[in-house]
Length: 401
Image (cartoon, rainbow, N blue to C red; front, side):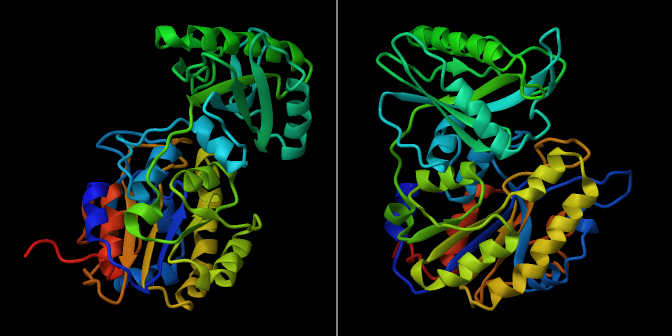
């Protein structure tokens, strides 16, 4: 649904909406005829909620498209991810509170491991600690580039932020991350003539980074992706009339929330801390986005059992959310990250939506196969979940006479 159309229908109400996102929730069986991680998990609270909800599987971006975290979250927030495109660099910058100017080009960096031939053996450098990340970022800050001011900021574990500031910079530079091991990092390449200077500067930075990090295995090289400049988009307050808050421990997700005008709340890194924050700030906002990252990390690590256990931890916290008496609850993931694939995938994502006004559809369990039979359907576009939530929150006027 178009944002301008929704904006004309929005009306005020006292109801509160909670969007609980288990990152990478969707999965696959680890053996033929088996269960996905969600289906294998013991989730009595989610199952009970599914019985009272409308359920389905959502498609984050499009049929057969494997989405990144940025576009899949924008879709859940009601923004068409094809129209509203943004690189990972801006999301990382906003996530760590970096003040981007109009001249800045931001990129998300990974510390990685390369062998003696320069081939990538680990895209995440063994998930080095954030403390080690800070040490390495301090080294990279010593790099000097002609005509460009350089900023390098730690994000979390193996992730860092690179910002280039100067005249005549463009974000039309192709990622250096090939997204798989066994290959060398890609050469920074301009995708338009206007980006030739930026690609040259990035190439110089990468060469210097290789030299500086040579003795710091497993983090002995860098990968860059998501070159981008900050856009100006309508906020959730402007479009949906919502005072929206984000409860997310990981910087990138805090960044995408800021991009659409959410207030990012201080919270600890434990799951319990996030639910504490929800309870503490319940009276202050109409919409809460609560993000759980570790389900995605377990999927990327190929750890089926850990992903199952993490889903069960979320289920155990669900009564705390329901005790607050929200008007609408959505539980879903931003995309699928099956542990058998160790990566994001194109598979649709289970979702449930509860409100006192929804029409329960007979689904009796929260899982991929059960949700496929729900009234939301097996392939609803994720971007449509927000207007359905607004309707169930009694926040949309009637259309037409």
